[in-house]
Amino acid sequence: MRVLVVEADSAIQAVLGALVRAQWPDAQVCAATDAVVFAEAMVRGGIDLCAVRHELPWADASAVLTAVQRRAPGVRCVCLTTASAPQVLLALGRRCAEEAVWHTATVDNAGLAGLVSAFAELDRTWTDRRTQPRPTGWQAPAANGPIAAAPPAIADSPPPLPAATLHDLHEPLRSVDRYLQSLLCRHEAHLVPEARDLVDKARGAAGRMRQRLDALTAPPHGAAPSDDVCDANEVLRQTVADLDAIVASRAAQVRAGPLPTLAVRPADLAAVLQNLVSNAIKFCSAATPVVEIGAEADGDQWQLWVADNGPGVAFADRQRIFGMFERGAGGQGQPGSGIGLAVCARTVRRWGGRIWVEDNHPAGARFLWTAPGVVDAASDAAGQAVAT
Image (cartoon, rainbow, N blue to C red; front, top):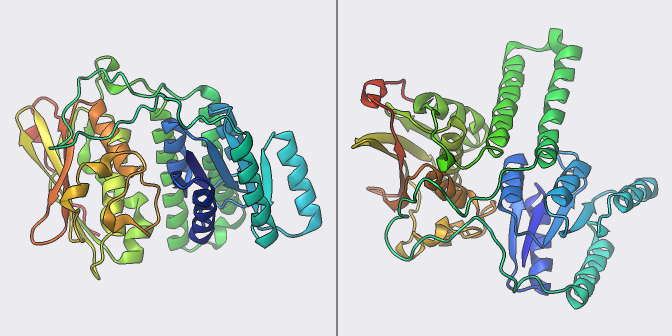
């Protein structure tokens, strides 16, 4: 039983997770807190139930529900709302009926009690799909050692996203861009330079997110010879800019040495860096998180790493955490979906690399992965260090 909770509020996530596990103790609950995690969950597939908050801060709930139903028509959808006004609830009920939403509930005692009853009825009448094998495109790592390099053609990769699904996933980003454009049109003359800079950064981040969604429609990297080349220094600079909020909230220091030019898609490298750097900051218990990124040549490959000064990863968890919905002991109680490292593992495998984790001295964890370089890439491995 796999449940996707599309909700940014951690308290509501916790309540829904508790209700789901009360009915289905073995359920895996994934929380999609933004458009990127939601897109990754859609690519991953294998969802049995999806709960969507109507008042999402980053998307129109109808667009999210439409994306879920187009990508996986058999998924039961629940629409949740914190609204209490009768006219709002009536309009929402009408809209959900038109969109064939399975259940609508308010986030209060009465609404949640009704949701519990709906779960119980669903469990009695639902043909149990949990025991049926399903193609997932995700595999847990081997029992021992780092994740081995896979052949270039990845047989278990999910198919590219259909155009209709991609359109729906783009809708939240279009909304963000429209709001920012409206802000500039109406108030640009009154914006101080710092405010204008923040608007530009937000629009730039939305544009890069669109590029990552577009990358999901491409065939697996090994399906055909690729001419993709990216400057890892520039990709890291953009990634750190996208993570500005979490970096600033923890007063984190992000440092990097010169990085190489790699024969991979920029969006793929950005996905790996974003997940590893954000995890390094999020799970660090030190007063000042310190994240270091580096690379060294390894034949015609490059070995890159992200190291932190956090609690590290227990030896028993070092393979399991790369599986879908898996989290290490230190990740329990932290926000997140448990799919970030699985995304990293899948991405690295696509270009024929491997990824693993080891101790960082004197403290913390060091995530390492390999990536193909370009001819004479060593001469290109000179860039400005990123420092935040």
